Image (cartoon, rainbow, N blue to C red; front, side, top):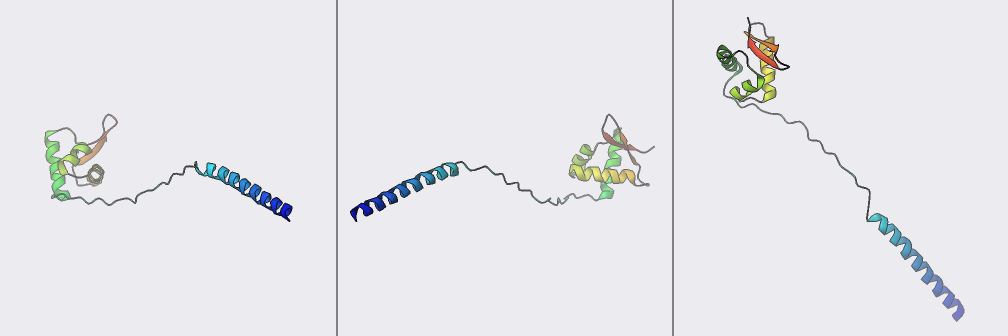
Length: 118
């Protein structure tokens, strides 16, 4: 009976030691998991324009500038009117496309500029 008890105790000891070493191997791999990167994109934001002038007033501002200068860039127009650069380009393009406005767009040195229509 004592021999069987010793054999059983030895078997339990071997199983415990085996489980501990296999667990240690698993823990070693768990220390260095694969790195993952989460990509988060923000929804587009609506930009409100806070300028005191309406489009007609801004057209007169552009015409007054063109009376003294040869051409007007979208960046300069954005600074004059306090619009964003994108809104300034869109507004100048709409002025140039409309038939009644005396502004036209031309390409000068790989840059789109706006001048007085002839």
